[in-house]
Image (cartoon, rainbow, N blue to C red; front, side, top):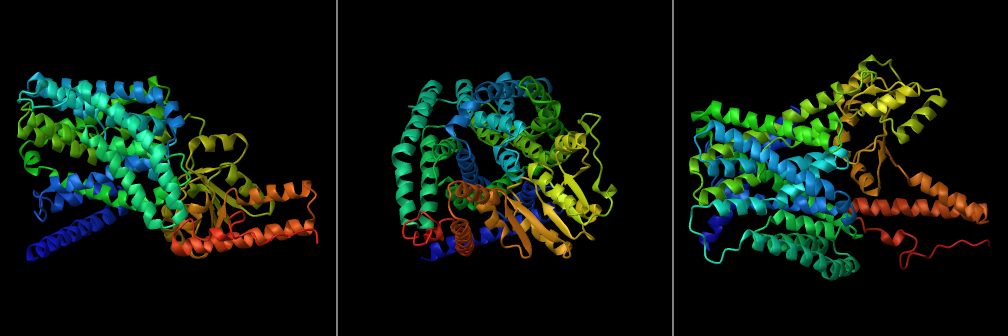
Amino acid sequence: MEEGHHFLADILTMGALLLGAALVSVLIFRKLGLGAVLGYLVAGIIIGPDGLGLTGDPETILSFAEVGIILLLFLVGLELSPSQLWFMRRDILLFGPLQVALCGLAMFAVIYSVLPFSWEAALVLGLPLGLSSTAQVLPLLQSRGRLKTDYGEKSFAILLFQDISIVPLLTIVAALSRAPAPEGAPSGLTLAIYAVLAIVGLILAGRYILSPLLRLVGRVSERELFIVTGLFAVCASAALMQSIGVSAALGAFVAGVMLAESPYRHELEADIDPFRSILLGLFFLAVGMMLDLNVIVEQPLLIFGLAAALVLVKTAIMFGLGRLFGLNSRAAMIMALLLSQGGEFGFVLFAASQSALLIEPEAASLFGAVVTLSMATTPFLMILAGRLAAHKLPVDVKLDDPGLAEQASVIIVGHGRFGQTVGQIMQAAGLSITIIDIKPEQIDVSGEFGRKVFYGDGTRIDLLHRAGADEADAILFCMDDRSIDAESLMPVREIFPNARLFVRAFDRRQMLELMPTENINIVREVFESSVHMASEALTQLDVSDDVREKAIAEFRRRDIQRLTAQFKTGNLRAGSRHSFGVTDSDDFYLDEG
């Protein structure tokens, strides 16, 4: 009993230490505009064995935190239906293999030419460097809403193939191994067959077991059961793949794709995302803790030189491939910079190569440091990518800073189809407006129609200051950005208290995320147009004006009741009884009498 008590105390102490270090470091790095990932890495370095030595074995923490990558791939799979994957097949099956092969072989050539390694050692060290960090790139694409862009889709296709490529890369290590082969170890071909059979099995299980199970859980209406079911699907799929020697994350991705067309996928996504965020943070903490500072101190020029070579070589190759596969120069450069770092699977392959007696432990530590340092460059490279995006524009696109705008009573952020309508109505009412958009292409199109749009990220406080938000009567966020929530708007509310805030919400889910912010007006982008269509249809169907108006009024009243219930409980299924068409809710009916 006492031993168990000590174990629990150690776990709680370790958890408090890790989360506390992450909290402080991430707050600092977020404030500096360098992102959370770099904050986690630095926090891990500080508290790790080569820093203050406050933690135990980082590899144990890393193994546990890799569940975050598994959950990440599951959530990405939820957003991709099988038809979308089929549409991406060329990028997955051609672009992906070319990227892994060319980048890996290029790094093999660099290592073999500058270091005194055998060709076998140089190969098993170079090929893993062709892989990028799924854990770093996908959250970045998701958080910025860029996963559906041309470069976002190609980046995802490459990352997906990289997860699959762990099988052939481990097969290469096994083929070159100098260690005695374990009895009964499957061949690479056998592993590939196992992987195909496992994927087919998962697809069948999803259709005939998991989908009926979710329908049953949906009838029970217990949110906890949804969480349990979702985590069960992730863990079971990942465990199956792991047991046959394939990437566990690939299994989780297949599970997500199986449920991509399920009516419950949004609920699963909302329930599992918090676990993913915390575990990914712990993953980067563990990566930072594993960094061998002694290796860097002993050979700083070599390690920084190799990290720089890795980033430059991969950027150059992927830029060329991006152009070859149809991306314009700007998108190809953003994709290349986004994927230029080493990846977490490098640690796995370095360990396998060490066990195969192909490299010494010192070499594994050295290249582990190279991968970690390359991952630390990503936030800075993303800043560079943003600047390059502006400089790569055609010369006839003029990007003026909002600081050049005259003081206006209304600031409109986003000038797509939604913002254009809002802006014209504001001007029709005689109000002065300043329009801001972050998409140069949109600014160019607006300019062709005589509309002046200023360039910048309209959610940034400093930019709003320059645009005159201190004196504005209203700020209208009209852009199509599903990542905007109460937390991101709170600083705007506090710093510009005299400006009325209006925000466009993509759907009910985003509206619920925005509702905690006080004194903000939320407009669902298709709500009023849907109500208008229903009203027009009722008119054409010869329903009386009195019945039509009462029906719409009752719908609006019930919708508010349902929103209130969902907001209070945090459950999208709450308040369903207020919806028309739901059992026991159809007690309201109007006829001509």
